[in-house]
Image (cartoon, rainbow, N blue to C red; front, side):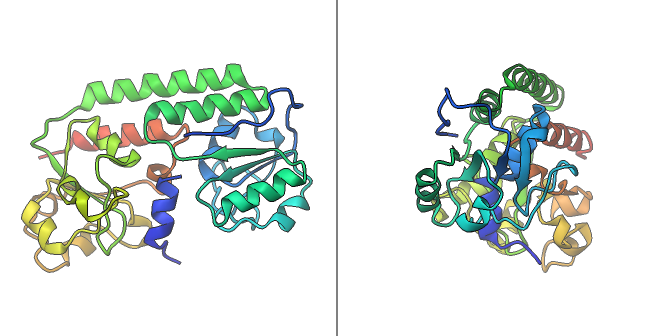
Length: 282
């Protein structure tokens, strides 16, 4: 089933966090209701402490995926796992109420709120390292990410003359430079055609029109919806799109599944992917 735009935006906008009691015992039965947090936990070596993850936490393959929902958490279902820590996404349905119920049951909650910068993404990894007793490993993961991301930007940075369109779905929702994903492209010096339409959506995810995109004539099109069937071929078939520079020069690029919507260790992979794609600009 295709993701709704709400689900895509939730994945992108899920870091202010509330840490569990620093004096509490190291958790050994963690439930992660966040795909990004799941990736963080396994990257810092805390995978053995995770007993269950939500139904969207599909990476790494060894993560104990369940039918638990990150979008609509169910307290009764969570309690059956006898967790000693639950990572709860602040934008989940009735998240505050869920947190209160869990607190009354004396179940510690790591309250996750979305990052707006790399610094905040690194902070979540660091915090989870502290909570799980994996601080040294978390520090190493962050250091590796910084090194890879810095190198990618340095080696592939382009100028503002390179305009791009990031497509969230085929109804033409996009992301401005003020969003987390938009900041990735901004770091390469690119011009985001969605920025001029920022006032159309206060959250940074405006829905563009086909006419607007054609007029903007982006040099690159990044498809975040490739996993749902969109491709250079389907874009070319859209009325009026075949004359876009991105289409004529075959610079319609399918983004890797999931990576662009998560802020864990694979962010470095995303930066490297974008950087490499810029090498092919004609």
